[in-house]
Length: 402
Image (tube, rainbow, N blue to C red):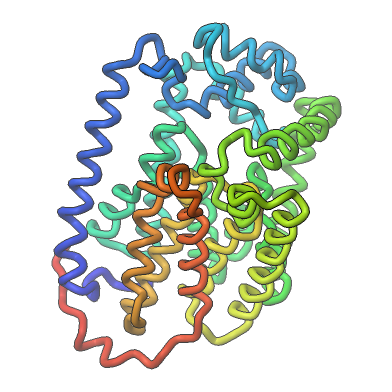
């Protein structure tokens, strides 16, 4: 991995103060949100941590001996209403049963304590992945200031866990393939992000990691089956219809929040066949380009970045808080630039991808331009595009003290 001492002084000198300003802004916004809240409900009548309400409510149902009820809209919503009020928005549970065990642990705590523990326990995992890719305090500050971090915090979501597992799994993939496979297999709670992984692992002959990942997924499925019963898996399969039809196809979540080719097409007025066609073409192209890159002699950093960005492109169901995966992807590409030199336009693409979670949702709502999807696509293109010869990369970098 790249040494922090080789980071360009110009970049490092600007990154630290800008990162501190962003972090300070997030802190002020979070404090204001908490100050204006009452009983765990914010000024707009939403639970603090919004989507975390579905995790906590699912956990409460597991503890009450009814894990299958997490997939029952009425019963799940009743738990949320009992805690946040009759007029609270509904946040649905769309995760497979293997995530219910963790939800139960969190549901055993009061809501705000569970939310704080969830974020405090998973944020360091994401930061550990960044540190392993690109060491140094400047990189950590930039990683903490990444706007997707703020989006994930305010939504109480699992982006820190997803980015941490994915990033660390890729860091150790060739050094400790079995452990890497386990980390990547643990991502099965977000199965939509596993589309690319089997292709990469199989077509590059990384069999130990592939079998470890498959074994982890199978083991978690069997454990959840034993713990929660087949009726819970039946309920999950039945609830997938609601997730597909209402949340995804009808855009109940909001097209501006979803960052896929499918949602971009739907937001621009495309019907379902055309939107699925656009997504299918995108997925197939991403699979082909990613496998080709991984079978080439390109740098490992570019391969890892392409896989992270491609995981978001390959599914129709990725939201802006899932752009946390771009954190390690950007870190990998910065590490690649440090080692081999910077291509023309690379800095602009990295900056665009870095900042998009800050404005992408509001801008997409106002203009219908799918900024989130475009940012992911641009970062993927930067990773897979052929490298032009670097021009004296060593002389362009100065020592940076950390």
